[in-house]
Length: 492
Image (cartoon, rainbow, N blue to C red; front, side, top):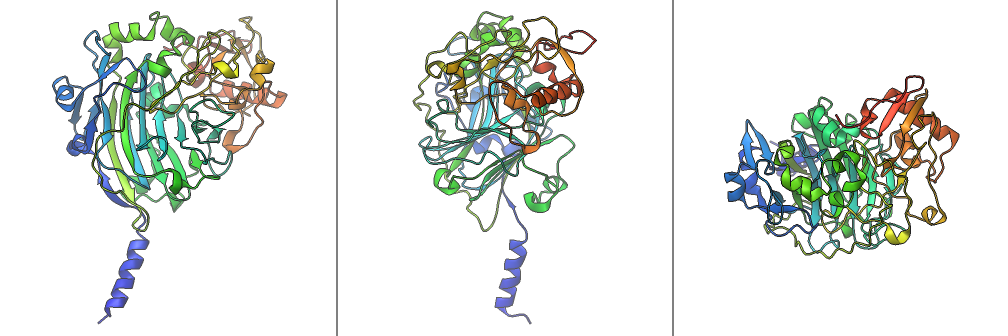
């Protein structure tokens, strides 16, 4: 007969090799009972009315169907009062460390006027940190992952991740970065990680692993999910997951800056980000003079503005920090936000289906701080211009001034990679929220980000655009292969 100590040791070994174990399953009918419904005014000044659970149910804004959870917005009525009715959910439980796995069939992004987000946040922002997992506005493509903290946390700009690090200081008031920019890594390889391309691909799985060493993010398009996730025994170290899109580590003691986070879903409209960049999107701005006007008077446009959650699960390592089980309401909506004056010459937001055709420059005093989804997450953006519509090839002339050259090199557009060979002609090449550096650094390669691209970088852009022309219709106004003439890239 084995001694108790031997049995205990065997149990310890079995548990330690089990890796992550399921702590909370938000899926199915119990989903809404595990969240509070935020009903205060939107802290991001969105044109939205967040409703309670009873109102959401009676107006068919929430529901479950065959195991999938629906979280939508009002798409039948002309909006009034504070704005279009929507839902903002905050988990009743908080977590420190863990593996968050979200399987989405559909997200509300890619529609003019919308600003959805999936994120986690601690109390007393930003002292306990914020982790942005999914976020975007209007007709954005590609996802960004961002951390926001108090002073003293920064990340490495390169490492074992496939995304592109745009900013590295997570402090919301970091010198040399736009206000509330935080540290941001873009999913530079997969534009289908957000909005319309995501939905056209039938969704996918987002994973965030939070440990003392790092905060890592993976995105798996539908059909590419690792087998161990589907089996309920996720193991990021198994080798089947591949390189994470983002890995936040370096000059940051994670445990000192991130603790006791709630999980949040929300969909707002217009506001400090989507509203302020409305005029830079020629597709959206052609629909109405202002974002609020469009959102108010076109309810049917938002029929597809919904989250369809296949599953949401939180796993914990038995030997790491876990949730504290605290139940409480949503975070305070009164986080102070300071927004500097906007310049008519500054474009903001993410690359859209039809980007602005106006070349722009910016100065430090008018760098926009759009994107305050939580009282943080501001993003400085620049617009670069091309050949003024002459249709010639190689028209990648960036606009730069001395003031602009001093700007923090922060954008909100995905890197497009390059190096595929070939050439193309452009009619309009101005893209909001992209710089030449965003087209480089593929597979984690660090490339100097300056106002003017080198010849090799231009060749990378040309070749990549030739290979992926269909996908990149979301990013460029008019693009055509050399010798074929310009082709329309407007949203279809």
